[in-house]
Length: 228
Image 1 (cartoon, one colour):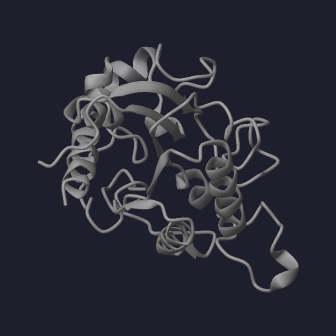
Image 2 (tube, rainbow, N blue to C red):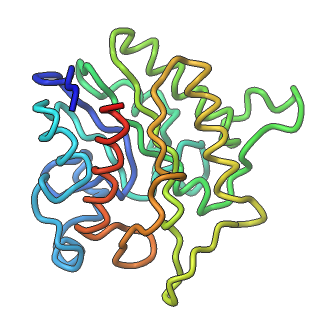
């Protein structure tokens, strides 16, 4: 595998899927702790998707700013200021060489409007496309030398207990959010990490949060795309 990331500093901007007790900040918004860690079989960074990617690339974790329940969009249900387009979250990633952005699952899960209808909505950060664009603008401004990786959303997130994937929430298909992620990433010259098309059988502990096996599948997909 061609590797130009050895010794580079990586930061993570994510939601509960990217949290881990003792490694993600802030510490009061962590999913993978206590019982959840045991249930998922995730105890150290080597069990997480981000830890495996960073280790395989010979890189170093700088900051993991992942908050359980967070969205890209500004929304009244978010822990203020947990939304990804906020000034706080786009300015607390240290001095990274690479920022891995794995956000959007909760926007889809809460059926946030994926895209604007007309120009009157162009500044409404409760709309996913607007919020994602705002987030990338701030990250580009704050970290002009950093490479940004934008992750699309894995289809297996959202399985029912019967194992069936439910792609629509509130009338919006998950592909609509992935389409916006791809478009905004292209607009701001970011790398797209394509999970939607490449992770079809993600193992989870509750239909939403990957097990150790699921984390390994995500990491494998990321590394395959980086080596292309």
